[in-house]
Image (cartoon, rainbow, N blue to C red; front, side):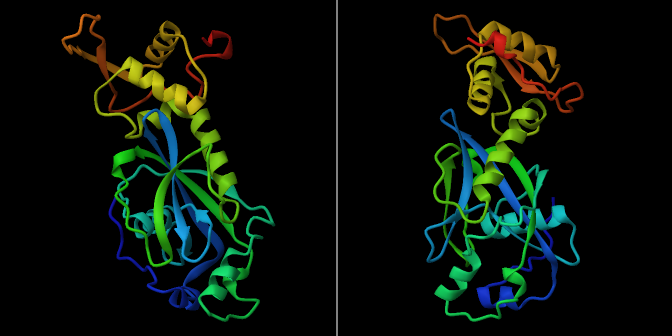
Length: 262
């Protein structure tokens, strides 16, 4: 993916004076990472506000939605070349009623008319991605003072309806875990079945019996078995696996049903 020449506005004043945005449409990116068997989400903090948000922004008139998602994610975090998946559209009437923009502009001493476009209703399109936790060497933009990982079940106070977006993104991930994990960078290129099971258990929030998990995963035909991992210990060496380059037979079902839980 090649990021087009950035149109990022250097100041909030420049942003709100812009007339090149598609009316009432925004994009928000839910970026999940896996670290120490904990699923986390990448959040940004606004200047002068004790609120956190997802990396997001507005859509220019001359770009596609996916291009907008890729652009704002790069502008806000310097992350690029990610597998971004559109997962839901958020359009509740009250989704922006916590007045983040009004407070932010007031703190900056910027006055705009009450009918300004930035105060109007916005429908946002959600994109999500799964990345290696170590990839996020971030550089927050002019509107944010910090960028940090948070556990998905221990979120700080969120702007707008971004807590709901994260919750919906997690539901999407759980329903499509087989295909999404295979397309992600959450695991190294080669991994053991135990590594994969720990990842599934973390995302799905449930424990699986080892034999059941391995049997169901192998039946999906999304893995290639490689050499054994010899670490010098007395234990039986486990096989290493990698995801197939093209996953054709993955399903949208959980790898283990509830009646097979440990």
